[in-house]
Image 1 (cartoon, rainbow, N blue to C red):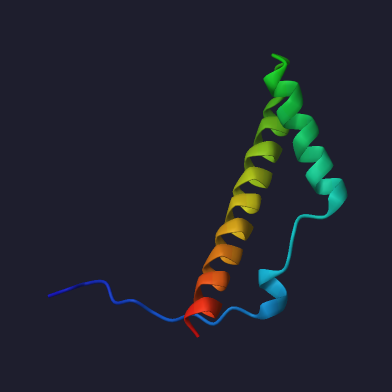
Image 2: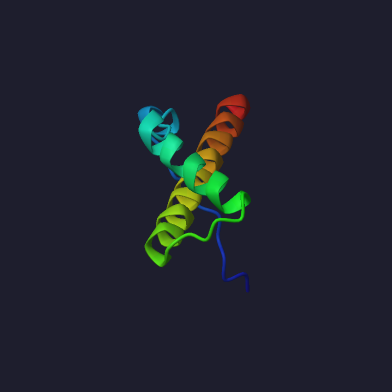
Length: 73
């Protein structure tokens, strides 16, 4: 028996258009640039960057899925 069943989850359109605010995007980019330049981030900065990357990835996936659903409709 299949233990996993696909579910349809409706996503409000305004959420699919949501993006990180410019200041947050700039903060994330600054942290990533520092890390790329070899500067060590503090533990709290590393945690902040990881959280922001996860949020940005989640929002990207949300937009992609929304686009896919809209194309199928």
